[in-house]
Structure formats: structure tokens, C-alpha cells
Amino acid sequence: MEEVLDYLVVGAGPAGLQLGQHLGHAGHRYLVLEAGSAPGHFFETFPRHRTLISINKKHTGYADPELRMRMDWNSILADLGDELVFTDYSEKLFPDAPDFLRYLADYAEKHKVDVRYDTRVTRIRRDPESALFVLTAGDEEFRARRLVMASGVTKPYIPQFPGVELIDQYVDVDVDPKSFTDQRVLVLGKGNSAFETADNLIETAAVVHVGGPRPVKLAWRTHFVGHLRAYNAGILDMYQLKLQHAILDGEVREVRKDADGYHVKFAFARADEVIKEIRYDRVIGCTGFRFDASLFDEDCRPQLTINDRFPAQTPDWESVNVPGLYFAGTITQVRDFKKATSAFIHGFRYGVRALARVLNERHHETPWPNTELPAKPDALTDAVITRINRTSALYQQFGFLGDALIIDGDTARYLEEVPVDRVLQDPPEDAYVVTLDYGPDHDKIDPFDFVARAAQDKANDSGEGHYLHPIVRHYCRGELVATHHVTENLENEWDKEVHVEPLTAFFTREL
Image 1 (cartoon, rainbow, N blue to C red):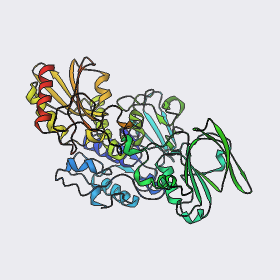
Image 2: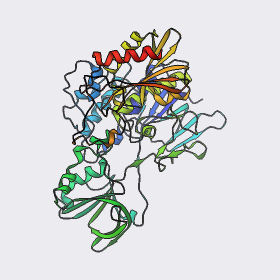
Image 3: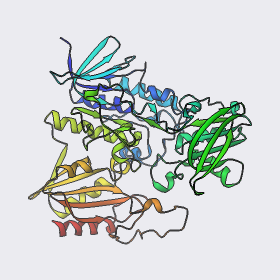
Image 4: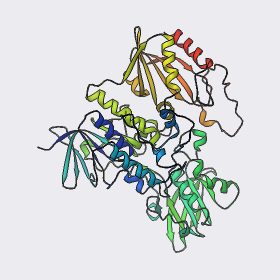
């Protein structure tokens, strides 16, 4: 009889490897299936220009490994307290993709993650009698009680307009800038892949236009690292200084190809829908990626959302319509879409650790790790201040993951790194949720304009601070009854009297 596993994990990228480590450490029977011959197959091709924009800040001045992780956007986690860190593989602030591939291979070997390579899953079905997931790969079948998709977003997301099939796509376009010498090029999309592509061409192409229906959003303003990063913003400089290249706001209505090149009908959003036909030598689509749900049989295919780009998920990262089907890695960004960091390694690594705890709690009768302390103002304040001055999970997954203090009489249970939505889904009688987050309308503040900041030497519980700061919310049976803002601090150090005393007073009032 074929072996029935507790878990099958599809994809041996950073999320799949880390989850495999967590599952193995907990003693579960699992297997990771990977289409490539080594971990991180996606990174063998992407980003196309082979430079990661995930920060690799090796020199931080911190000795504490937890604090160092705030500046390390590439390392993944392990349960054993001896994490392999990517900062030992490269000193570049923006590292090379091959170095990350080396790191993933060493992680898999160090932690003995059980991976079957060269195993491309072609079909996912559910046995109607046993309810087991059955995955087909070549001539083999694999069976498990639960399935975790850590396969990433592997298919291009291509908007539909007449002639879209004529243009090049980011996934396979030539990346040699010399092949675009003296050409007129339109790059469709306004994310980092589009601007990465455009910046690669600004020295050789005669004209580069970057076009899309919405205005460019800048990461340094929104605090969402998926928006345009300064590293890829060279063409903005060229555009503003009138050096032929330009940014177009609007939509492509049609593309046709003639002997003299591509003719693009472009509807300008800022000019009362003026439609202009513009000639280009090349058109490149850089409009993002989507989850591939075609592997699933109809009776277990996950419901999709956000233009059918991602699987819809519960606060437990489970499919909303297929019980036992979970998700890990960049496809979990649906739950904090373009707000926090679940789309990126430095965010989803904490989501993966939380998912492992969810699985242990739901399916293996293992409670969420917690510590007990007296339900007294000083004790709660000490616990919160200690955590917020050290945690990387709440720092990276701002507003999405939080620490929960569950009050039960004279005792408090302190649970770390719980999805905030999960706390509120089945709310306890009396709980406090601690997050790090930005203030209201923080994405409307231009950091290069003069904007008054909250005074760091004065308590400020108004919630008007724009910078990242701790927020403690008190819930009774899921209803928000009180909120306390710990005043912001330039160095992200909240351990002074101005931070401690108001928080103690808040707990005193609420308890």
C-alpha cells in the first residue's frame, strides 16, 4: 500500500524549504516535491537581470541575531536555533541571484529537508473515498492528508487587449541591452520588473516609455517594498530631466505589427481619454505573475481572487473552499495585498513559521507556544517593551502579525507572532494585541517634504505619528475597546520613560 504522508509540500523555494524544516522538526511525515534539479528553481531565471532588490545589510552594529534579521531580507528561519544566514554568502547590499541559490542548497542540506527533485507535479486531485490529496508527477503518485502549495506565482499575468499576443514578455525577452540599440521601446507595467527592464535599456535605447493604467507608487513613500524601489528608478530621473524617456499613465487599447514595427493605441488617463497611436520597435509586457491553478481537478480547485491571480485564503492560510489545502510563501500575499510584506522572503518567512504553528495546533493538538505571566500592569508592560525592542517578525510583518496577551483572571498568556485576523476570528473574552505599524495616511506623506514628526521625548497617544511605532489594542470578545500608541522613535528603541510609563498607565486603566 502506498505511504500516506501527513503533508505534501509543492515547491522547494525558500518557503517550501523552511516549512519542510518546521514539519520535520515537529516529527510529521512530509515530503517536498520540486520540479527543478535543485532548490529555488524560480531564482535560476528571475529576476531576469540577476540582481535581487531584497536588502542584504550585513553590517548593522547589532550583536543580537534577532535584531540583525530586521536588516536581512533573504535569510529563512529554522527551529534549531542555528539558522543559516544569507549575510554569510554575500556582502552586497543588493546581492546576486546565484548567491541566493547557493544559500538555499546549503540550507536544504544542513537541515536535511526531505525533497524530491526533478519531480514536476502535473495533476492534483482528491480521492473521493479517503479525502486524501493525490498528486501525480510522471508515473508516480503521492498521497497526503494535507497539501501545502509553496509553488509561488509561476505564470505571467497578461492583461487582455487586441494584439497582446504579438508583444514580448518579461519571462523570456532578450536581456542584452545592445539588442535594443537606437530602438523605441514600450515597457508595459509599473512594478519593479517593468522598471528593472526599462533601466536596463536607458543607455542603449533611443526612447523608452513605461506605461500602465495607474500612477507609479514609490516604495519610499508607501512603505510597501513591492512598489517601485529607488534601485530601479533611474528612468524617473531621465524622464524628469527631459532625456527622451517617459512614463505614460493610461491603457493600451490595441497593438498591431506592421513592417515598420509596432503601432500601439494608447488611451491617456490624464488627458480625458485622449487616444494616441505611437510607433515602437519593441513592446515588452512586464505586468506581473499569477498562481497556476490548472494543476487541480475541478473538485479540489481553489477559489481565486484579485483578478484570479491568487488563491483566496482564510486567516489560517487555508483555501476558503478546499479544506486541508494550505498555502505558503509569496502566494500568501493575498492576505495583506500591497500593504505588508507577505509577498517577500523577509515577510513570508514569519508567515511560514506561523503556518507551522497553525498546523500543529489544528491537526496535532499542540497549543500555540506561549508563556504565562501575572496579569499585572508592570508585568505586561515589561513583556511588551522587551518584545517590541527585539522582535523582527512584528517589525517586518507590520500590522499583520501581532503578539497576543490573553487575560484569564490573574494570569496572562503571551502568544508571539499570531496573525491579527486569526486572533479576532475566534476572539477570547479579554485580549490585548501588540503590533508595530505606521500611522494613518502614512502613504500620503512625502518623506522628502518637510513634515512635522511626533516629538520623541513626549508621550503621544493620538495615533497621529506617521512612522513605525508600537500599537497596543484591547479587545473584549472581539470588540475593540481601547488603543494605545507608544510614541515613535527614530532608532526604533522604545525603552525610555516616555514609552514605559504611558504604557503602564494604559494597562492599569484597562485591567
